[in-house]
Length: 139
Image 1 (cartoon, helix red, strand yellow):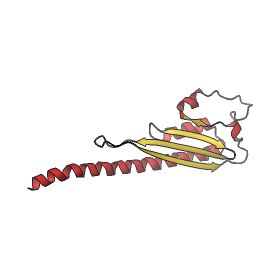
Image 2 (tube, rainbow, N blue to C red):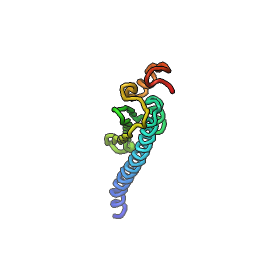
Image 3 (cartoon, one colour):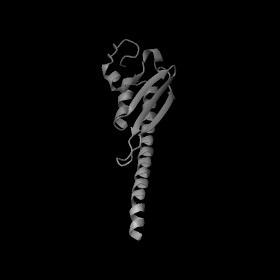
Image 4 (cartoon, helix red, strand yellow):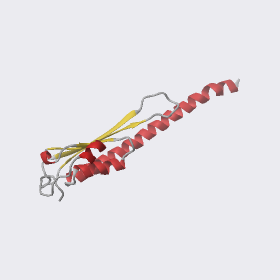
């Protein structure tokens, strides 16, 4: 009789363990995304180019992440979202972990019209490089 009880309880235990591990993975990814967004916001607030900031944040987060860096007046925003897939045995949709960090720009950082929003690798690599003497150009 104990064998039948174990046969019923064991799959449930495996499923609960897998879902708990998925939750721990999601929490770890959340911390990683928040840390990367915070680092990116600080760099953008100091005046680094938004393209360089987006690339730095994208390197720090897991594959499949969406990174958006923008400036709104005297505030820079970094948004990161990553889907966290469930264990293979669970037929559940992925969790989307998101982090948003905003930081005030340092004095002397160009206004937002000189620094367009950057999101996704396509925009970051296809955007033409500004001339050195134009607003938002290399320093």
